[in-house]
Length: 124
Image (cartoon, rainbow, N blue to C red; front, side, top):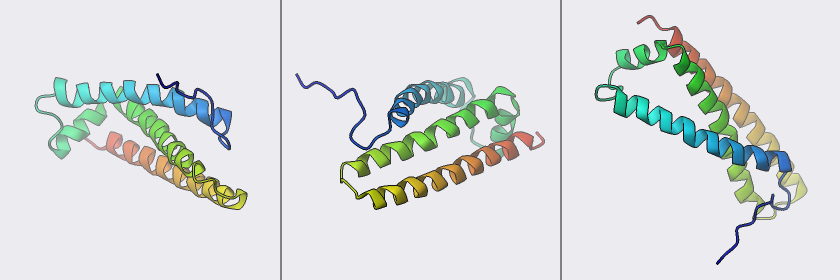
């Protein structure tokens, strides 16, 4: 039996590692709710623009989708950073990766939350 390593790898911050674990669990829960609501409860899913606008008109949906974006973006970037750590980058390259991923993450989250707010404010 192969034992899984249950601690951060070399060069990985403990808080990032813990965030990755907790966010992974929360992403699975929110994704499950998302799929059930979009594909099981709705009549045929969200197939038209009006269906999407009506869906986002419910007050809990923009909150749930925003939390999803806020969790998924850093979770995925931390995961890719972990893969890059396996390549043993120099300290300088790791600093560039950290800054690049931080900027990309912030821009992606801000854009995603902005887009969700635009959808939620559309008249239905």
